[in-house]
Image 1 (cartoon, rainbow, N blue to C red):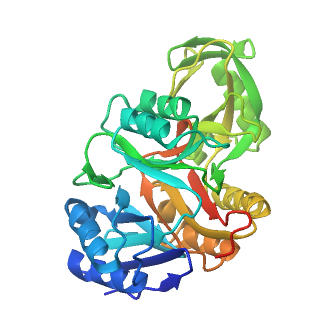
Image 2: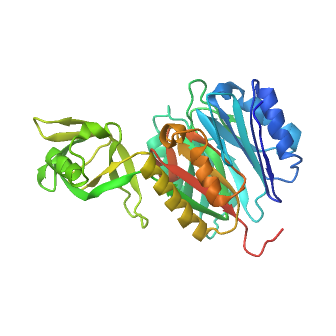
Image 3: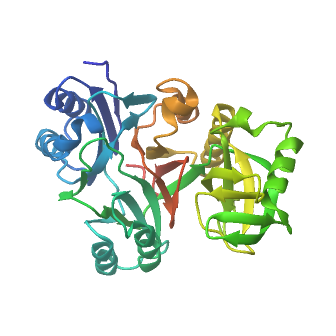
Length: 379
């Protein structure tokens, strides 16, 4: 069994372990969590090597710790404070108590909307921790509908698995957007894009679905080549796989954008193809995604979040499966940077097929949610 660590607090306890069987991993995690009879909820994430055992693991943790309500899902990788696990059976779990908050699990968007009505309106709206099944065709519409109809802020990710696509929301769920709704939550959220802009935004002045025909009234490929030249890149093939486009998030006051793949160039038509639909009048920016840019933006996000949340109690981290060791060069590097900034804060999460923040589905991002101590409560 891999070495594992114990991080406990008055409200949050975290455990993580890798082992050759789910029973050994779950037992180690339960021993780290200890007796948590008074906790409100637990979050559990397992690697896809244990995808078909998620329900068994949650049941074991409930019996062993006293935390009866568990939410979670499967990732090709899972993470905990300063640690990442890929390509081996592993479990990361956190149990917590959330005083002054009201909680409800949901197995669908409709259940979440109903739960929001039953819990009543809070001053800051609802906070939803969500796990989505990427196979669900309605998912792109589910996410904004859930945020809109619960007056909610969403954080989470899409299940990633080479096996079963399992999820929990107090009970097993399948093929849904599910999770936990919290009224009167005390949280702070940060998002890291992992990209470095190449120049500024351009106006789309000609487009056909996902084919960008013209930017700023000129052939799109001409603008693309000039943008690269201005950044010192004379041969786009030198950055193959690292070049992307960014579409600004309407209404964002923090400069957020959606990263989409650059699918191809047509030298004859002077057009470019991207991984999303655009229309004339939209804005588009070219960007570079690599380890240097990803680390710089992650550290920027952590600085900003620490300034807003100086005393967090615990956290959840949802990262893209294309990040982790594939982006940062070694297993544990990404979560090591997070631990450098936050210390031994109890934190768990997973590497998914997409990341969710507010009312949008992102790619290539990391979403960090920190639970805060309620004002006036020092228990």
